[in-house]
Image (cartoon, rainbow, N blue to C red):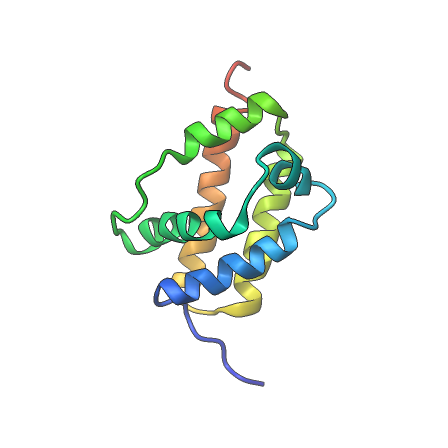
Length: 128
């Protein structure tokens, strides 16, 4: 068995995002957010989401968007629930574990969990 490498650069993040979206776009619980609500164009989205995760993981300033505003808008179009966030985190962390191992792999899984929690608080629990 070959040892897995850690996430070290943008190419690793691209590989992670391609593998993650291959799952998410087919997942029965969350695929409709990507396919029918956001009408996600993966070719356009991948560079943006790679920049987002590069900023999160490596403290760069490559991402210039507002991920929270995007997800709040999607929530208005088709409401999220806790199960949606749980599935997203599960698929994300599973994909990381399949491809990578190391300090950055653990860090990105923790950050994904934190981001999902904050997004849930600012969408589904905003008016609770």
